[in-house]
View 1 (cartoon, rainbow, N blue to C red):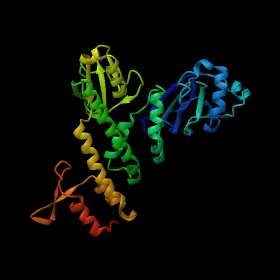
View 2: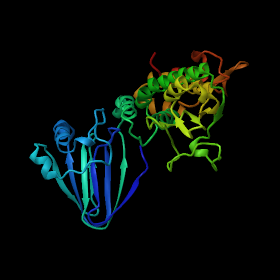
View 3: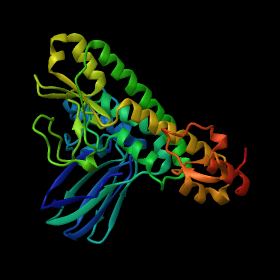
View 4: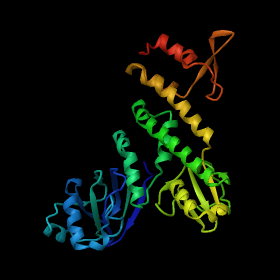
Length: 345
């Protein structure tokens, strides 16, 4: 899910109590140096942990889903034990891995100079909770490591994605498209007409001075909810701010005079978003009906669409989604697979 992060610690370098807001497991490898002391609290004891912190450090606890902001609270384990919190303790030596389970709280102390490396990863079933997780992050005004939209679009267009993963991703991609188009229409109704295309992160060259600065990871962040923005955003040159579309709508509804300073910035236009889903849906439909023995073959063919040459029905010709006007049942690839690979249905 993320690229590895390198950590350099020294004597008594300490990490505050922390739980990944994305609900992801993560792993850390200690390359070299001194040992590292870890303390952990499983998710099942998070209620008692919260009660203890509300008593010991109430000013750092918030009445939100993500009630403990990152990098804020340092409480000695001994005090937590006195408050009835169950926690575990381990010492990591060089050459060892530490695996942190989802929603577990951790804190660590370095016993000297050391170098370690960590990375977050996800299992396919994490996608079932991804939308709610990112909603909680946004409502709690926490910063996210990755854009959910960017992650889902990457999965949907990756030829290596498994059919079961694609089946989970499809409804979310469709909802993102519908919501995005609805927000853009609302902005248009409010009078926002200026727009500009954003380069895809992989194709980004030198930044233009007229564009809002991205953070060091190359991402944009909403000024209000700190959402990681990928598909679109609205800039306000008067306040030098960047907003997600819902908060841009809120801003322009309350401050119509800011309209002349605002601009919609987008990665995909409306037709491109529609086209992405229109290609994705039939390909997934084709995959969903295949036998397990041919699933790998179908995954390879998933992104290939062919039509038949009208003069020679047995001769396939490449056809892109924007020119594919024949019914899917008459698609050459579908017909061949049904005949030779025994697709069910």
